[in-house]
Length: 134
Image (cartoon, rainbow, N blue to C red):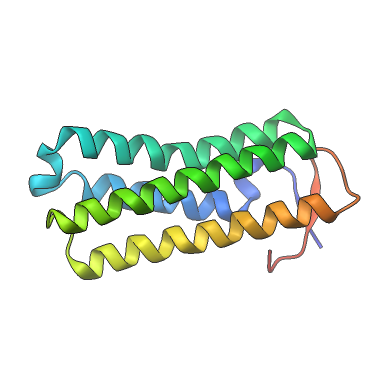
């Protein structure tokens, strides 16, 4: 079993950090960069994923952490919804959209699985033990 000693150890946080970089790169280009409302909203939403994971972890309580993981998952859904707008407005190519969308789905699954694990485990507190597959 691997131990999570800091939020940076959480796979969902690592994947969300990568997604954040990709969203920033994509929203920096062409017409996407000129759509200030969508660009700023999708950036705020993607930032919210990593931020909620980190904040929930740092609170130290399992129930509160699960709640923040839910907020992160909700933000992931918000990013997915905004990606559809970017696709519909031709700000993203189909392959770029698929990559970003699939990464969001993966992060959502990771968050859901982690929250489920935390609700069922007897391990409490900041140093959560997980299996490497989680």
